[in-house]
Each structure stands twice: as C-alpha cells, then as structure tokens.
Amino acid sequence: MSNATIKHVNPANPTAAKPHIDLAVRHANEGRREEAVASYRTALESDRSVATLFAFAKLLDRMGHDEEAIDLYEEICYLPTPPVNAMINLAVLYEDMGELVRAERCLRRVLTLYPNNGHARMYVKDVCAVKTMSYDANAEQQTARRNAILDTPITDFELSARARNCLKKVEIRTLGDLLRVTEAELMAFKNFGETSINEIKAMLNSRGLRLGQGLEGGFEESYRREYLDQLRLQVAPELLELPISALELTIRAKKAVQLLEVRTLGELACRTEAELMGMKNFGSTSLDEIKAQLASHGLSLRVLE
Image 1 (cartoon, one colour):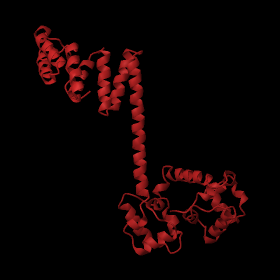
Image 2 (cartoon, rainbow, N blue to C red):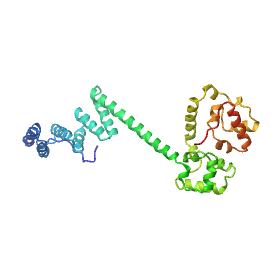
Image 3 (cartoon, one colour):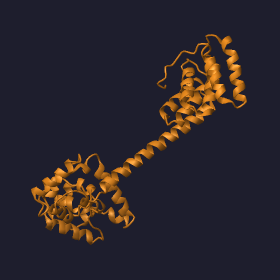
Image 4 (spheres, helix red, strand yellow):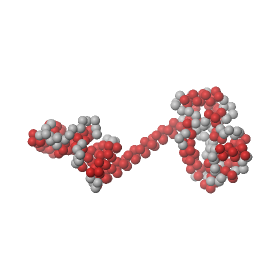
C-alpha cells in the first residue's frame, strides 16, 4: 500500500454524484481529460463507490498519473473481495514503478481469489522473470565492482619503494593478490621485514581491509576453481587429474603438499609461490623442486598477475 490514507469504500450519496459522473464520462469521451478529472473529484466528495473509484483510477492511469491512480486502486483493493481488474491494474502499475514485490503480492492475491485467471497467471510469470533479471543484474554489477577494486594495481597505493619492491618480487601486483596472502606468508619471503609488513597492514586497515581477507568465505576456493577451468582449456584434462604421487618429491615437499590438501597436479598448479612459501619449514629448495617437477609435465604454479 502507498503512504496515502486508505479509506473504506462508502457510496455515501450516489444520487448527488451522478450528474458529476455523467459529466466526467462525457468530458473523457470528448478528449477533455482535465475537465473529466475535475468532475470526478467533485463526484468523489459524495460517492466513493467501487464503480466511481475504478472509473477515475483508469482515467488517471491512462493520463500517466500513476501515484494517484495507485491510491484509488489501493482504496478499492482494501475490500475483502475487490474486483479482479482493479487488482490486476494495480499490479501492473506497481511493476511499472519497479515495486516488484508489491506487484507479485497483488497478483498472488488475485490467484488466491480467482485461481483460473489467465491474465494474473501471465502477469505473475512476467513479474517473477523481471525480479530474477533484476537480481542477476545486481549480482553482476556487484561482481564487476568487486573485481574492479581487486584488480587495482599495488602501484596505485601509497607505499614506500621498499614495500612495493618486496611485493613485486613475490609477484603480488594487485589488491586482490595482496588480500589472498597472509602475514605469515609474507614474512616467509626473503627481505620482507616487519617494517614493510606493518606499512602494508596500515594501508589495508585504512581501507577496512586486512591480509588474508580474500581467503575467507570461500573466495579463494572459488578463484582456484575458475583458474582450474581455464587450465582445462589449455592442457589435457587427464594431465591435471594425475595424482601428486606422479611427482618425484622429497619427503619435506610431500608433507607441504599434504598440508595444503592438494591431491592432483591441477590443484597444485592452482597454488602460488606465496602460498607454498608460507608453509612452515618450507624453503626455496622445496619450492624449486616442486616447480621443476611441474615443469616436467608442462605445468607451473599460478602466477599472481
């Protein structure tokens, strides 16, 4: 319902209103709509019957006075069993104004009272389709905005040359890359000191962000799945499905892979150097070993770009 006060339909004095209603009809038929509106307003002072309200609401609807038409239709629909045409017209106006929830609710009421009404069935399908499209569009817009933010280059942020160089060396080039690593992973890199870490954390904190945030809520897992789908278009799927045991790894490297819960070559190729180097007791020797083994199969670790 609109914010207008809903009045109970009450034909107080239809006899007094009839001349004004007849005049309104004549004006409308002759194309003098403003005069018809004035006559209907006078008629409503003594007669707020369903017929008068409906006729006036239809006229306002055709003239594009949607809000006032809605007020009158709502007054009619306040009745326990309002006319079906009033409810359908109201639903259509709701839809035109983007009030999709109200439109659907109105049409559902029609179908409750008149289950076999074909127009209501058709309109409710249309409204539901528009709602779905609207939700999809909003989701796409939100995804696009998020991706645009995550793709912001690190060079756009106020960081010291030392901090920027440290990030560049570990292939962290965008905000998204930075949010997908933890503090422990950064500390594991050579020449990445506490001063640079604190500087980066302060920059993120000023924007309501933090290290490792991109790993939460399934974000990173979703990102890896997308990357794996891309790999399947570039290399043989059966290669990606080979078990980790197909690699000749030392015990230390195998343990690191097990801790990451990586089972196949494809899953390992979705990981980055930063993720591996963040593992406890995992050094550059083990990293080089894994990179060499992947290379022997025509694969490599995912590069942050």
